[in-house]
Image (cartoon, rainbow, N blue to C red):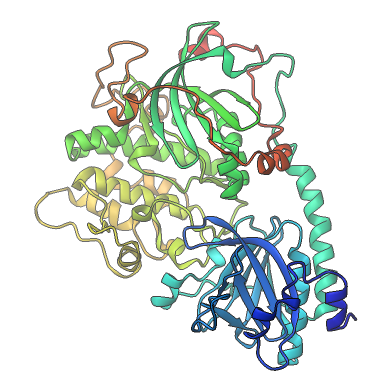
Length: 552
């Protein structure tokens, strides 16, 4: 086993803090520098920031690039501003990703730190384990999680204020330095096998036919999201118009969304449902990936709901039924949607609706639970907020929220001051209040209340989608005709021509359409992860759409 001096001799003090006399004044008696290096720290908005970490025989320090140590004690001198220091004795456990380079330091008395270090994570964990065992004279607890993103296992300052802990409660390992090294070696071997598998998940259909950005004219901007935007484009060869979604690879990498983007690609390619938006092409440039999809001329359900304030029950029921069929199809694919909201429901020129934006979707096995903290705050299910694991029932909760919003005009747990923490408490603790201003049928109330059961095991739909279809509110729905789009929509949007964008928000359609670039982009970061995107290209078997596909 290496001694403390061995750590220094092997270059573990990369930032040479041991010889810094100003730093030495901050350390306690006998406190020795064990490791210093550059890594990434995630803030409460999950933004990745480059930082330094200093580990001593007594504590962990979070240090910025200028040498300012973050701790919770006062200022010691002009050279080092000390704001937070994690005592090794307060460290209770560490969560480690089996897939990515993330790890979380669990500090129950305060709040957690979430880090990522592609190059030095194992070294950092080994040194932390060594320091912990020396101070506590017992092994350190580790949780190894099969998640690329450990947000849902990180107790933030806001969580701590309302006494919410996200430390895992499932199987743990008590490890010393030697057993930790063995476990990390096992994880790394499995990670390499997984990496080889995930890079070939999506096969290219017609590699001899190439589609590039030059094949399209960009006409209008339709919308904008966290990682890119959606544009109306025309294909030069066949003059067909499509919706093109562009995603910045740097943003995807920086926010650890690679796996989610792969799931979106998987859903778009495999889907044959009329209630999910259809993928036509997918291609990429060095800095972006592009999904070319059917253009839904009726726009977002959100725009129509905003214009009408609320829908009558007949109209809301029609949309709810088609959305239910879309979710059913996803669940049959083994995918949880997790981002149902009016903005993600699109309408065609006839008035039928379908789901779009599968960036938050998650593939799961039957009965499997996932812990990612994702979704729109107003639509989050209680089990997502609690961080104890969730499955397909979260989509039925979201359907209940949407039905309520369509009928009443706003989500049931909406917070006017946008206080998310208060909203989360309301979602988990309070029951639905329909008020007295707007009258809805007893059947509609019953459906909503049963979809919004706090306990997912009691929620309508948990035992299968058929129990939702059989609910009295849907008694007048012929599900066979609905699934074949043979029932007439209650509303037909005004569409002047194939390029009409009047049903989309003019905040976006008034923008100058262009394929934007990222100024001062991190090309090195994108290049490093480029192989993760190698199988995103998708071309239909015939290269271009046939006449039947054009009409979809």
